[in-house]
Image 1: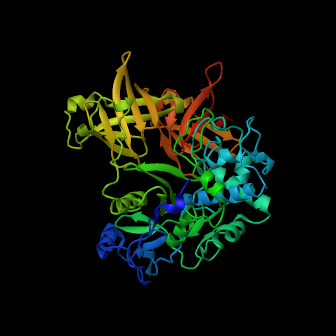
Image 2: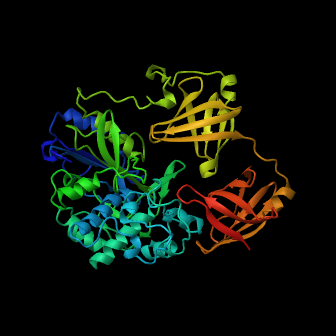
Image 3: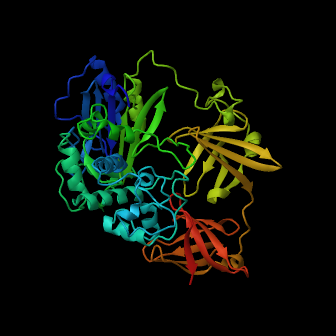
Length: 571
């Protein structure tokens, strides 16, 4: 990344552990600008400025200097401990860039190669018939099933004690990948747990020890550590919470695994880390360049992902970012190395990315180029930007034409569109619903979601189609269908027990009241109804039953986003 030292770098980290903060007892750092800027930042965090609420920590860097650093709200609701700039937060997936950096340091020393086969270092990883490289793992293109999804399906709670050993044993049992390595991008935490284990095996030190010696100490990140033991005491740490009625309840985190997550740090320490990308103290310019380079698929296409981080654009400005979320913790780190200002916004409780961009708006230069029209593509080529308005109203007759169920065959999932209070609602099931705001007679913008998502309804050869466009990159075309009619006799063919050797887990199905009851020795019983033919949607994932040559049900495959087609055989 040329001329970085000559450019203005502004970084902002917002760490929200559904946990957000009260003014710090530490004196605020001097602000290189009018005090009005501090007041504006404070107003953004008014919702957290209460010792009786979870809190937030925020820090902003400009010209290599921290110009704003403050805490709001409570780090511990049971003892009324306020958040300060020294409060350490679990930052979840923001950890991933540290993991990749550690791998690249070892590569620079000749101790490994970024394109080495993971089985060279961790032979317990099964041979799936395709080489999975460290690069694949670092860019979410490995095809490895996600560890958290697998553990949930096996009956684990995410507040269980989950160690690296548990994850490695789960990985060792896998028989299939989600896809051939390098063919797709699909976020996978598993890859980063494996990378951290590679660092440990190659260096002969624990990942926590390696990062302490090679990253945190040289960068003077004195309030940072990888938390590899759930019993370890960490001074000045925040605890996380979630809403419960009019109050809060604890959101417990017991992770004892590292690489994909488990970095404890402060906002100010993360700015020391971000400054290293401008003027490296640790790692060479080549390491920095590799970190910031867009990863590519086998066909040469890129997808917005670099290594342990993502490259985004805001109002025409390129920036590098990653968010994180575990238990009640939420975090966001963004760097704007090519602009005179860092622009970060976060809008609501536990949505730090929105607050980050709001802060960015207060720092952006007035003469910054206007944002590119994010919807100027074939999907919305006939729509003028002036047409995009939440005030556009369509009659219920028009909206009802789009109501129904839609099936996406490539990933075998269903979406329902229904009308509620004069608005179309987009349902993913399990109360996961988003409102759709019309921007033309057949095109809608999805509200209250991260990123830009548009939905367009059309017809093709008498088929009703729903096209979903995500961030002007990914396109998903679903076909309307009619759900099956349910009878007890029809449901009885699915009754029985099914076992997965990959999860060492058994599910039991029994028909009750035109639904199937799912039972598992660790999970609560719940009920599912068919969506389409042999396809059911459940709390654990989407289930597609399989049949033998005689049409008898003999097993099923389950998918839940980051795990595809995991097989259970009927016992």
